[in-house]
Amino acid sequence: MAKETRGIRQRRELLDDVVAEARRRLEQGGPSAVTLRGIAREVGVTAPALYTYFPSLADLFTELIVQSYQGLEDSVASALDAASDLSLDDRLAAGPIAYRQWAIKHRQQFNLVFFDQIAGYAAPADGPTVDAQTAVLRPIAAEYAVARGRTIDDVLGDDELLDDFLAWWGAFHGIVALEVNHHLDWRDPEAIFLRHLAASIQHLISPAEL
Amino acid sequence: MAKETRGIRQRRELLDDVVAEARRRLEQGGPSAVTLRGIAREVGVTAPALYTYFPSLADLFTELIVQSYQGLEDSVASALDAASDLSLDDRLAAGPIAYRQWAIKHRQQFNLVFFDQIAGYAAPADGPTVDAQTAVLRPIAAEYAVARGRTIDDVLGDDELLDDFLAWWGAFHGIVALEVNHHLDWRDPEAIFLRHLAASIQHLISPAEL
DNA sequence: TTGCCAAGTTAACGATGTTAAGTGTAGCAT
DNA sequence: ATGCTACACTTAACATCGTTAACTTGGCAA
Image 1 (cartoon, protein in one colour):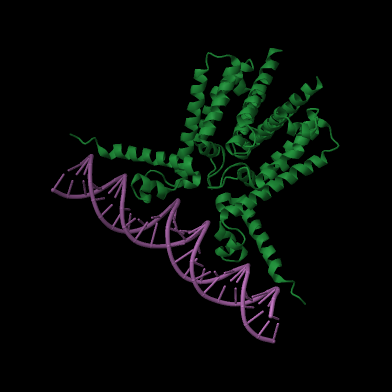
Image 2: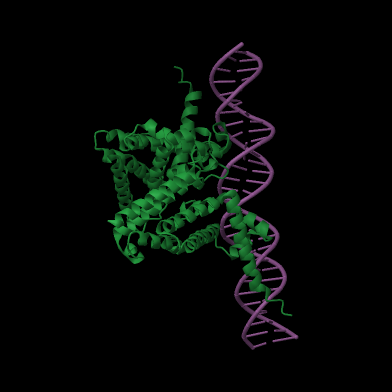
């Protein structure tokens, strides 16, 4: 009957439970609600048992960051897939719009990804976070390249084009960041975002028409 | 000799010492380094003594946020004062440039102000943080109004003008936020920022010339 | 069957925010 | 001057946290 080799299977399941519970706590109570003891309690083990899976709490957060990046990446990618038949304007807008919607739906994950929240956590030039960032931006950059009448390799290879793209990203990212953290609550954040997006896209395309 | 009514004077000094030590810890070790017990240890009292001055740790953070806003406000205001004789372009750039420089010099304070970092801390439509935000933006908005050929009251009173200004703010804010949190380390963040700033200012002024 | 390895447990250490109860003193009213 | 009161402050304690050390146990390989 081979009780399905409980060893590895349960290990996998427990690990999934741990990060699922961690993400749940992050969403509901912010990073400070993500505690080893609390998670252990919830998944039915003792706290030190989690050190089998993560060397420290910081590494659990690293996993959360990676998964959050993945969620954002998937959200943006599928939105751009669905927009493949639309006009250039709409395709350009689809990425940032999906970016914003994911951010609003997962505020804590958004802040976790883009803000240094964990104490000693740096996440510099190494680690999987850099790859994750480029994975998020690549499909958006592809549309951007089309709007500028170039290929994506042109954009990535030219300092000025790349900086322009990063600035374009930073711009709508900033508006989203302000909204996520309630600094635009006294206005209509979506209106501000969409208005900026339309203007920036127009400004982007018109010079290419010259 | 009237030993200068030690009561209130010492109270004032101790309070100043507390927030000074708190700010020092924030800058050096991030929010998690701001602990009541650590601060109390440093200023020479026991931890519960601090509850005379702050009802809870969150209220100490509120004070830090307010003071950080003040620092940003002062930095921007004095930069704009110093730029009063310059061209419109330079005056428009002076605010955002001071904004960025302050942010880079006080990364932790910048993140504390613009990101929900404290657990249950919301800081919604009430509190002094809203006033602080408008105090920071007002002088920048004044220059923005000139560039649009309006008065600042025009900008604040017109939905579209106001949204345009907030989007303009959000744009350079976003680039700064990315830089502060090391998401642009693989490029030259200042170049991206200045290039965006110049382009956005040009785009801002040219329509007004029509 | 025997032994080992790794996952899990209990126990403990140091640190945190916060509360309760007690202490002393500064300043004021009498 | 004396007594009282308010308040700054201390000590003690509780619940929580991350992390480590030592021990137990169960399944797999030899």
